[in-house]
Image (cartoon, rainbow, N blue to C red; front, side, top):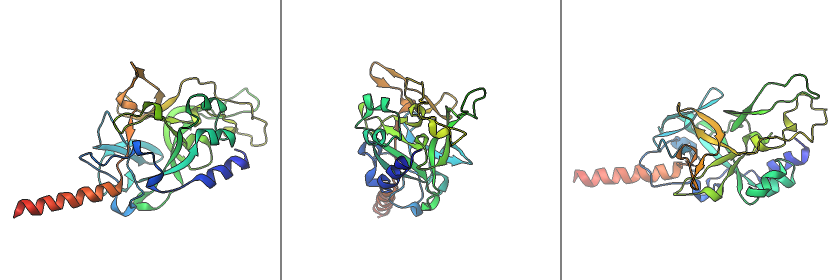
Length: 255
């Protein structure tokens, strides 16, 4: 990635809950996750098909679904706003072809922050090993979801697809899967500026039929996106309000 692109990511990163689009925040669900220690900036993304009882969690370098728990620090994430797609295109971070449909959509990184401690590891697309027989060798994105260093490549950038927002849920498009992937070149001195992902369809964060967290091509029937590809967040601040309301209700019931 160019120095210009690195500067872009460094300047626009803001680690606050307010930076997350409203469509990704929901305070009306019956279960929560992320620890109190992580604070009000934390969220635990969950999938519409599974409900808020199952949230994203870190297991090694893999990302899985885990039973929502306010004591499981593996479910602690901080969303970081990274500007919109148009700005990222101008900075050379993502492919210009993303501007056609998503220019004004925001980009977000989800940093893993157990107990509120930033790990510098973010929710990201994975990639293959170096290809052989090509000049230069390069790594191509695949459909696996892992944690990877934040702010280095487009693999950790997620487009919040506002056009499909519904009922507090939205699909999250991985910008790295459709980005210029010269940054994945094995030889950093090679001229790979013209290597652009050939994939035409957006790859979005998905829970597959086996319950695994993966990337999959957008599934839309009759203008409705599959519930397995729609996501929302549960914020720690909302959890605190829920716990307070629950305690109040319990006290009133005991009178």
